[in-house]
Length: 67
Image 1 (cartoon, rainbow, N blue to C red):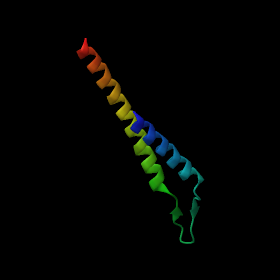
Image 2 (image 1 turned 180 degrees about the vertical axis):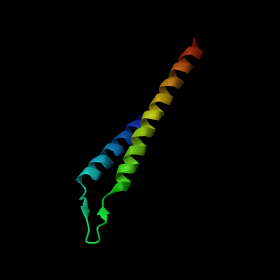
Image 3 (image 1 turned 90 degrees about the vertical axis):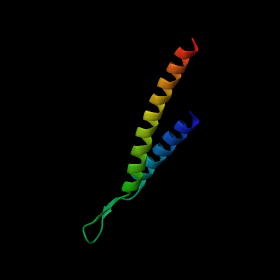
């Protein structure tokens, strides 16, 4: 559970970093943006939600088996 919270926190910090980083078009017409931070944040958030759902299913199954 702490690991999921840590991944969510890091993902939020990566989103903040992405939004605060300078985005511009250089002299050659290339967009300069920190896409890696957005990608890692997206994967982290999706992975955290998936892990939380798996944890909930696992806890409910183990509770039913304990009865």
